Length: 401
Image (cartoon, rainbow, N blue to C red):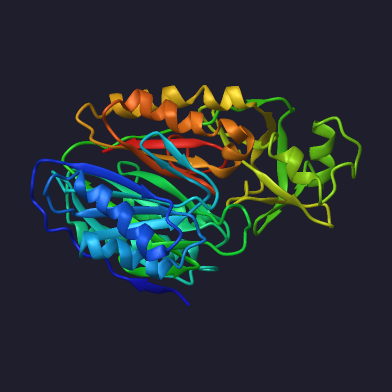
């Protein structure tokens, strides 16, 4: 059953946008929330926050964490999610490390938030509902963007994105990511004000006087021949070219049928996702997370539909890191007066980077300079940049505000 919580319009009219970020690795949830929020709000130099964004390790008592944060930020609108590591002003908080908090005044923006719980099986309608409700809360404007966060285990998240897109249309940018649980794939959560929402999604509508642009890059290159998805159901690719998907995938990698087992599959597939060919020639990345006993491939968050043309891809730590500069420069060049760079990277990228994961955060901050960077490692990224697909795996997306 779909349950919706309506958003509330930000009433702040201060034209000066001020942004602060903070983080904490304290063990106690309430203490960690307060500590990170104090640092973020202190940077506002006495201004009242209009919006708070929270990304955190799932280890905390999340209700206590939000209570700690809101004891400092008050009734400011709050949106957030659990993930697989946080990006806070050039720092990377790894698995289980802590919480990151961003606080900002409204500046020339107006904000509205809406959320929905128990969205499984009703993703399209849920997307439409939270987009419509958050837009109503924010009010009309010449330009807008949506920050979308969702339970990564809710099903095919392209359906959720499609529902949001039915309301926004092509002129409203959409960015964000799917909540994670440090790749345990058991339970993930999103936040709306003081609520911890399971099996849900939350949308922040940002009403703006100027265009807001989303940038997405991935760094993967094709190695396989084009393949046709001939059968896909739920979150699984069943057949490629009319043959069992796992067998065809192994052939593309030069492996014998069955060489990739359920146990060792992820160790190989993380380096060889699928690229879904788009009309403009670009590739949207889809990560095969697991192989089933039936020989089907489970795709993280969003399955290429039957009729899609896909290719097996390859990449390295260097090729994936080399796109960071382009993402940051392009996002900031599109908004020369920006005060914060929001970034959403993939937990699979962090897995591949290993001890070099910190390089992604540092490269983003080096380009942003005095502007803080803030984001998290998610289990699926949201960004519509070309074609009709707006869900991605193993990619980096960003937007400057």
